[in-house]
Length: 242
Image (cartoon, rainbow, N blue to C red; front, side, top):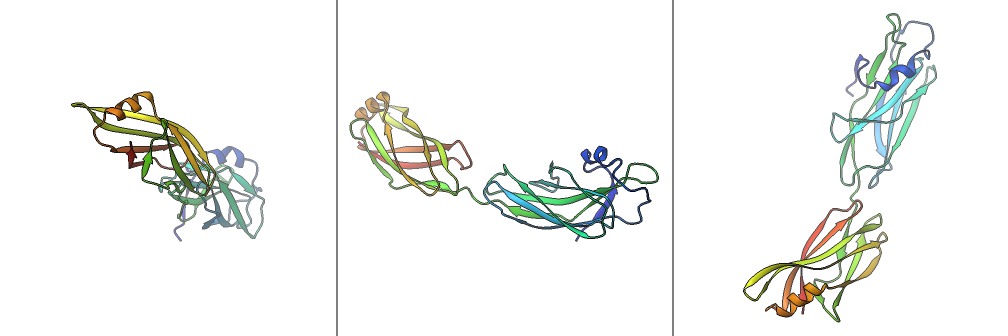
C-alpha cells in the first residue's frame, strides 16, 4: 500500500472545519487510511469503502474520485471523534457514467493549523472500479415494410435501466438522376428495462414521394437511435420494403 503524508493541499474544505476540533496535545502520531474495494457498483452508482486507524486523534476524512489519478471530485467531509480504534468508513456515489473506470482514494486530516498542531493530510493508496454497461436497444427485424404510410419496428430494451430516446429513419436515395438525403420519420420512445415494445413510425410525405420515385424496391436506409439517458447512439443499416 502506497501511503504518503503531506501538508494540507489536498482537501481544502477540511481546513476550516478542523479548527477547534483537536484536543490540546501535540500530535504524537498520524491516522492511517486504507482503501477497500468498492461495492454496489452499478450503471451509475457505487459505494466507496475504507478504514482509518485514528491513532487516538480527532480525524476528518473524505474520498477523492475521478476517471484518472488526478481525481477531481471529492465526497462530503466527515469527522471521527478522538479514539484509539480502527473505524470503517463508506460513501455512496451517484451520477456516474456507465462502462467507465473510476479511481478513488481515502484522505484524512488532523491538526489545528498552528505551529504547535500543524494540519497533516494522509492519503491512502489508489483503487479502481468500473461501472456496469447500460445495455442497448435491439431490433427484432432488419426489414421494414411500409403499409398505409407507416412502418413498425420491434424494439427491446436490453438494459438494467429504462431506455429513453428518439428513433430516426433516413437514407440517401436516387430519385431520377439525382441523389437526395431523405428523413422518412422520427419518433421518441420509452421502454422499461428488459421489456419489448413495438414502435409505429409514420413516414413523412416527402419520404413517401421519394420512395415512389426510387428505382430500388428494396431500399437500404439508416436507422439512427439517439438516447436521452445513458445508452450510446446506435446506427444501423436496414432494408425498407416498398
